[in-house]
Length: 104
Image (cartoon, rainbow, N blue to C red):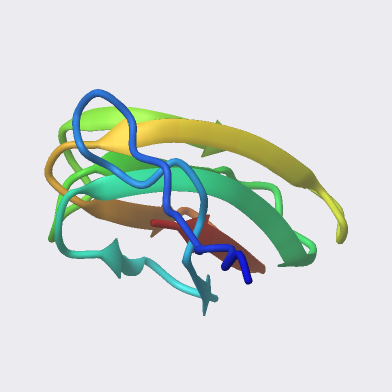
């Protein structure tokens, strides 16, 4: 009997292509403190009139920006990012709201 295996696809840099984890944040903080891939963001509580900037950094709001969630984004805003993060993933909230980050 044939067996189907579960495989994980990786990009050229060795990062998983699909999101394996999620985390929800309501304030500035670490999404992932190691290299990986930011797959998707979902706004779960509407953002105030300030953006959320996501950086390629393991511990600080600096370095290469991976994506900026627009200010005043409503509940249900979803954006596929699919970007490798060489150092880690860090989200900087300039206002209030909640975002779920899907990453690998």
